[in-house]
Length: 136
Image (cartoon, rainbow, N blue to C red; front, side, top):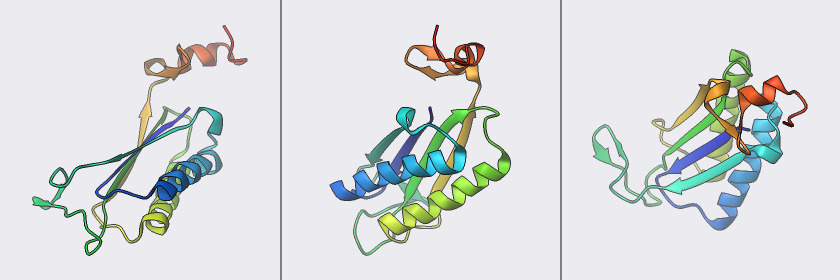
């Protein structure tokens, strides 16, 4: 039940957004073993003048590299360090493939949350672990 939040410095096309959502969901399932049916992907574009690197505003035009920040929230302890490293590497390659070359100061963050601190469908992950069938 991961959530992925992708923030971009320039607006992707509708086709790019759709491809990003599909392929990030597939990557999350493949590399981290997460279920696609409960994976959410949010794509946001920050307005010009709202993204800075080295104290300078990033221009949202085709002559400069784009920037991205992808964060994924997963349940603590469900993935190994090697899986998380593989996800970061593969996500970086995917973003560069779909969005063009990204500025080096683009980030991918894997954030682990305790099972009792989040959930979906009105139930925490801790409650789901207590009932492996997923039902109350």
